[in-house]
Length: 146
Image 1 (spheres, rainbow, N blue to C red):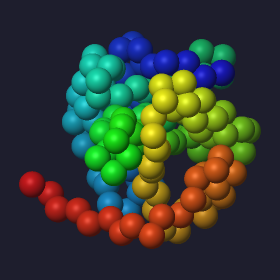
Image 2: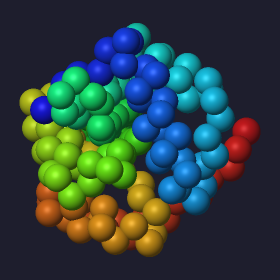
Image 3: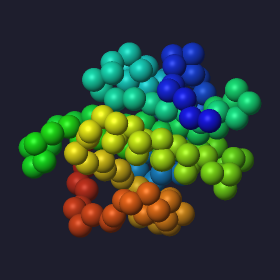
Image 4: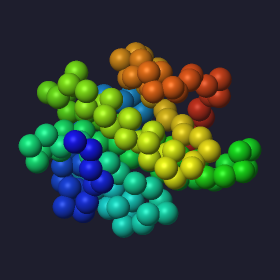
């Protein structure tokens, strides 16, 4: 079942991010750093929301949505981040439930658009995103650490 994350969930969320960052090519897990960021999101609803999937009181998946404002669309938009399902629980519909919940939340909040980034070779996730109506963008991501 999908629930809104709470501060008491921070340790579990950090463990999920540790697993996520071992899979993603551009990010490195740094103990404590990600927990601080998660706490900021939980404390400030203007930043975003975090949702978790629980099986028998164990958090086995998470997804977050961060808010921004689009001049192109003239309204609030969302960026989906940190979508992860613990490896032992994949294939059970957890990712599908998390994404479905986020899409319902986006509609409820009347966001103009939702965007997410994914590793180029994560074809299983891409299939899930397409199932939920997301389309591949022609935009290219550039980054620079500052």
